[in-house]
Image (tube, rainbow over all chains, first blue to last red; front, side, top):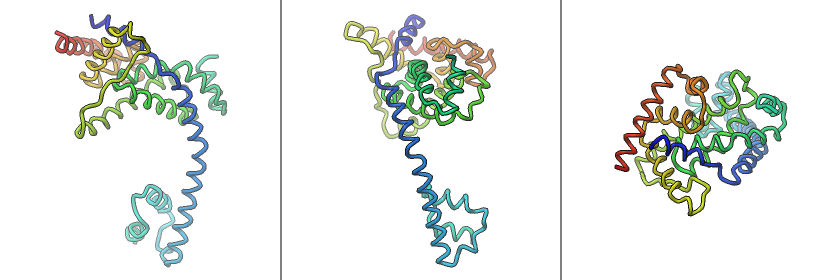
Length: 87
Length: 177
C-alpha cells in the first residue's frame, strides 16, 4: 500500500512560473551585488574617515580592517565598540 | 548537450545554459524539496533558493561529481536547514499547512488527498530516513549516487531505506487504521 502511494508523489510537478522566478532572482542578484559591494566600500571609507578625525586610526592594527568591515556592514558592532575592543 | 557541457557554458558566463539546466531539474528539485519539507509554498521558495545557490557556486563546481548529484546535495542540505529553522519557529506556532501539491483537477481529488496524507506522514519520520526515502523511492536515484549526496556508505543507505519504509508504513497505519 505504502509503495503504491509513494508512486503518487512522483506525479508532483513544479509550479508554473518557477523557472522565471529563479531567473528573476539571479538577475536581481547580479544587478545588486556590485551595488552592495560599492556600499560596503563607501561605509568602510566613511568609518576610516571618522576614526581619522577622532585621532583613533593609528591605534587600530592594519590586520583588523577585515574585522572592521565585517562588523560595520553586518551591524554587529558600532564604531565605539570596535575602537574599545582594539584598544 | 550534456549536463557537463551546460555547466561549462555557465561557468563561461552563458546564462542561457543555466536556464536549460533549470528546465531539466526544476521538477526533480521541487519534488525532492516538497517531500522533505512538506509545504508547497515553502518548497517553491526553497527550490528557487537552491537554484540561486547553485548559480552562485557553479564557478567553483569542479565536476568531481555529476551536476545532478551536486544539485541534490544542495537541495537536501537546504531542506534540512530549513527544517531546523522551522523547528525553532514551531515553538511559536505549529499550524503550518500543506498546500496543493499536485497539478490535478477535482477528478483526481483522491490522488491529491493521498499525496497530502503521505507528505504529512513523511514529515513525522526522522530527517535522515526521510531524505533517503525521497531520493531513492521518489526520485529513483541509485544507491551509489545517494551515498555521494548524503556522504554515507552504500550499506548504510540500504539499511536506512529499509528502516525508513518501515517507519513510514507504521505512521501510515497509525493515521489510517
